[in-house]
Length: 247
Image (cartoon, rainbow, N blue to C red; front, side, top):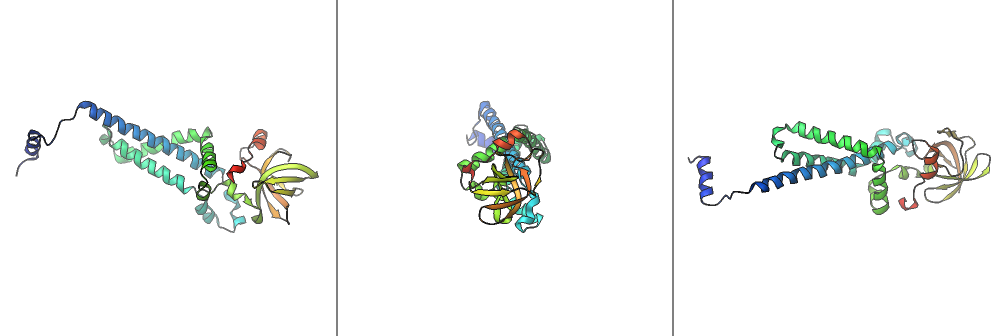
């Protein structure tokens, strides 16, 4: 049987295999690194959005939805972002493996390294607010996005379930206020027996989440009031009212 070496030499002599210039392999290797970098960056952005959505969601109100906690988690996880992260990590692994030096590393090191880099960059992106910004842009510019990804805004649009959010308006009586919800509907909010989850007194202009009961057309009795943003600040309380475009 003819050896592999002789077969290759014969093909070269017959010009079935042409010698490629060195720059071709350099460009090819650089392209693999570029694709790896793009995959890691997109994966990092996906990670930032996932962390934002998961940390911003209210996982403790599942009983108001007549669900168990596992059901609430299963129906609320941002699967599209989780899938995108998984795809990007797979592509990053594949592209790194195809680089000039990729064969030297064990598969678990390549995969683990890609995951580690994505987490580090994604954590920094989340801390900078990029995850929230991307979620907001997607909500504003792609209407089907809200049908795919459940967010805090979807959760707090259920007055019939005792969950409502919006902006505190003009006081009517002591601890009774006008209130505008996320759908721009107006309510009479009774907060006389409400527990407040923030240190400042309730005041006009604050954006809040409310657990309570709908007591008739335009009437809502609050049992617990939380700031809209989980990190409390007076500036954030008055600047974080969601845009009506996100409805």
